Amino acid sequence: MKADTFKKAGIHFLHCRFAAVPEIPYVQDVLYALRLTDTQEYYDFCVSNHATYVINVGLVIAAVAGEVLTMERYDEAEARKMIARAILELTAERDKCLFNSAVIKAAQEAGTPLTDSTDWAILTSTCRCPQCRERASEMGFADSSA
Image (cartoon, rainbow, N blue to C red):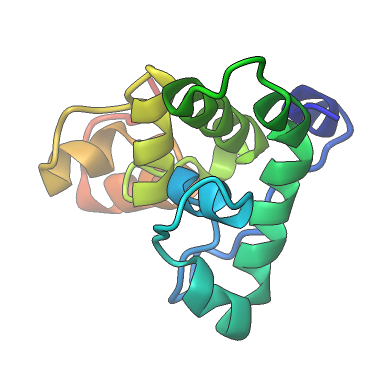
């Protein structure tokens, strides 16, 4: 199955905006779970401490493993790009927050950066997730839904 198949079926990552540990996977952790690299970000910690992250990594693997593992000639840059695109597709729109580093890194690796700014006020006023729109409204920023 590909990520768009999951998306059409309404399947997205499990995600709680109040979680203290990552829930949206990092590209590096998907490569690690596929045993294509020896380095990881949060995977080892989450295996024993946070099942949601591991489930979400598994969803990305289900979406990309067929393509990544059967490349005629393995190309890590291309694999990273495929994984990053799948992460973005499997992240619900409401969870694509500019304060979520996994989303930002995936967008950069997919070649579609979401922002260049690191300024808190700019991120808050331009992010389209419901939490940031609410925060921007409370703080009197201009309409951030544009």
